[in-house]
Length: 223
Image (cartoon, rainbow, N blue to C red; front, side, top):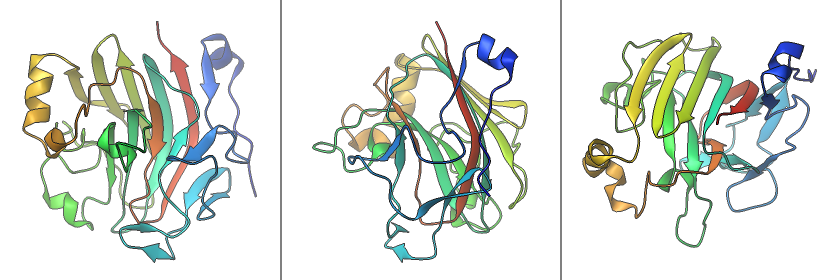
């Protein structure tokens, strides 16, 4: 049963907008395409990546899915649930340029989604659930166990970034300053030209080859 997503009158008055209607993938597309792979399904009002047919490290008919719109200053809210031993991510400020970048994570920042206890990345600092992937460790760790819904928030405003997970602030940093450049230079992203420099971009949900669910996806533009 597909459940339509809704906003309360107060949320509408405050400027929130649904990014997912709970019924179909209107407003979304696969990276570098205009369509959505058939492995992205909708179950009980949630996006569901069905990873039963793997292809290398991703899913056949899957792939990362992006918003049609770009955002600069924003407050994103959504809920995610990961499978046992699963890996995914929320990627943002993506510059969609398939000529120069094969994947959206080669330009965009990521809030990691992971089964910390079951996936090998759980043993890697800065690769655990809630981390600003490969740059900053989430403090405190706030992810719920596998199979439970997590409430995630990402706030980008005037050169600052904050991650909130299950009502706890877990990452805060400045973007695009000298300290930020130092973080990037010490990360795996140093080899990707212009990574983490785009001040406006699309938002993606990652296909990392595992079952993952997303719902109640909404955004508020900040000024």
